Image (cartoon, rainbow, N blue to C red; front, side, top):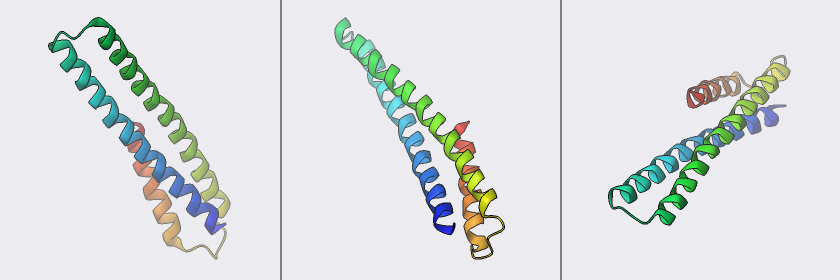
Length: 107
């Protein structure tokens, strides 16, 4: 059960990083589109870049959905493991910290 708890909070950490990367990617692509607009690039390239921006925004939503599901999974795993005396309290502390960070990332 301890291993299951560790896997759940490590998975959640990974998804938090993915959300952060997705936001950075969106910012980069939006800046690129703004630069193209300011330089009066041709419409085909600008439309392609708009598509890239839309995909970046969509990926943020997808990662947030994954994040919500991973939070629920970790909370469920913690409920199942709360009576297991072989699991150190530090594992629950780490899991609670990861959940708090994940909820901040959802905002």
